[in-house]
Image 1 (tube, rainbow, N blue to C red):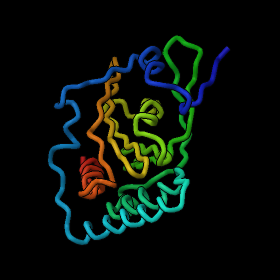
Image 2 (cartoon, one colour; image 1 turned 180 degrees about the horizontal axis):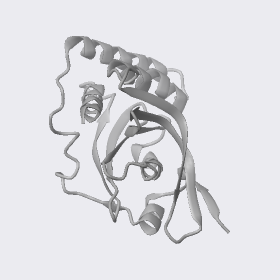
Image 3 (spheres, rainbow, N blue to C red; image 1 turned 30 degrees about the vertical axis):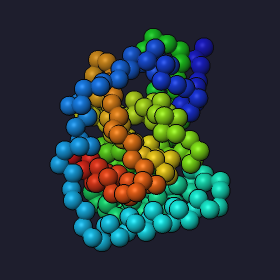
Image 4 (cartoon, one colour; image 1 turned 135 degrees about the vertical axis):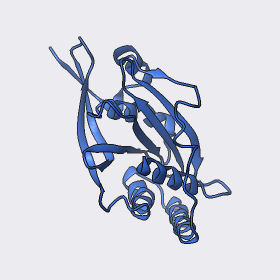
Length: 206
């Protein structure tokens, strides 16, 4: 009998045991978030500062839920990066399924935001409530990324809690391997959205 699990209920240990997932700590493995990032122009800085101000205002009216993070932070950044225009497009609440080899278990769920270029997954985005850490969304995001049908290219993901952001890279070969970027905070003295936006644009250029 096939057992079905929701991606939001699994943890990293499950993905390690059932999908042979490995963490890579070599900095050269995930170089894309550090090398060749585009410089911001003044109008982009002003826009991102306004997004930060809007998020700070949102904090005054808790609870800050996932949908609020998507509307107030992720949506404006994707707009600014031209990801709503060709050759890109987005899908929301996209259903996925993955199945471990030789095991009667299917992991299913829905990706919050999927950014595509033609049929290639550019970025899978998992948003969480303000009270969650990025660690809480890592296993869920990796489960979604394992469902990426493009096996010959690296996959990228973004975990966003509104206040904190982290990027993930997954390479699916005989053994799927992943690494994470530093975390970027919107509440930092220097607006962390600057770095998040630059990395998003860089991934879009790959």
